[in-house]
Amino acid sequence: MQVSLVVNVASECGFTDQHYRALQQLQRDLGPYHFNVLAFPCNQFGQQEPDSNREIESFARRTYSVSFPMFSKVAVIGTGAHPAFKYLTYTSGKEPTWNFWKYLVAPDGKVVGAWDPTVSVEEIRPHITSLVAKLILKKREDL
Image (cartoon, rainbow, N blue to C red; front, side, top):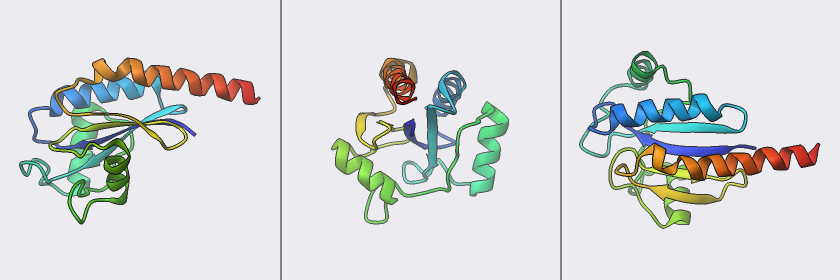
């Protein structure tokens, strides 16, 4: 059980540099036992993720030293949307309209927050650290 921040990422977006750097810092600070960033490349917005899965992962690891899980490229909206994003959209009431939408998922699988790319990772960090702290306390109580 852990806290997750699910993000639809893109390599050629104006938000790429700022978000990848902040997401990796978050992963470094809080992961991987109680928290993980879960990155889902998506090419649906501005065709800003045109490369293959291998090229995308290589770019993210080489350029930003990304250590969080990178999934295969998916659709996040429309009829072909990945089931995870259908769930995130349905439960949060917020559908991605661009790259770098962020969904905060509690250990029980409930979506507790959703933010568009104009909201920085630093702005949502307090929500994440609060959830992680609660999880750590709960795990201690369960011992």
